[in-house]
Image: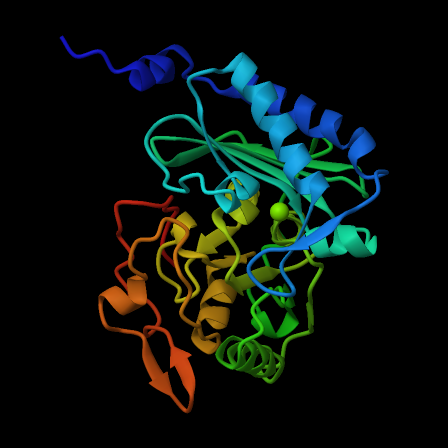
Length: 323
Ligand SMILES: [Mg+2]
């Protein structure tokens, strides 16, 4: 007889609604004092990658509160990973936490800062919570049960015509020539389609929720981490949007590449003009493009696979669907 404790937990707790409610209550609770506090800023991976004591403090508060209630659950938290914890997603019930998405905004008091909490079982996201603290907007979605902002149901714009699209992306924290030239040429090519405009809010979680709530029609990015978008990817798909890899193939949570859009047509339009730069996966596995030899250099840029030709079926991250 083989006893699998994680399976037992899964069976007993088939409806994760109570976990969701608990996540919502602690997300609201922990920010009450944190944002008033004095900020001590440190650097992480680059001079533009900031972290504060609040990031670490909020993550510790969230994890200890969840552990007390669900002692068998696992965690992937941005600051725990920065401190050396494993970012590998297993089949066990796992909370994927970004205590502050938009730390640079937070440091500058630019008013878009979010707490992102996702919960995955068998590598499938069961629910996602994004609390945009300054706006007091609480976005949430449960798999198969829709997406909401402050209890109002969300729908994406449904836009099909990319020339009418407002697109959000992020500038990121990379400052090397290859990343910056890819980033700027992507923006150039999108504007030349032409589209209505491009915005960068400073938090991937809120960017994706803007797509879910029809404020924007698409979001794309290379270089964000799984904790930035795990929750909001579900919020977008539950709001009727699509979530893909930047190549247009299947979305992989650990790949650090994403397109979220109002429709397949808009996602396809972005995938056709946007290029990726090499980016180490969150779980340390080989990059999909490099693994199958399909990422090539052209005119000094790394060029991703042809649209729809990338078989992104890897045994790791969370896969939603293909364009
Ligand atoms: Mg963060």
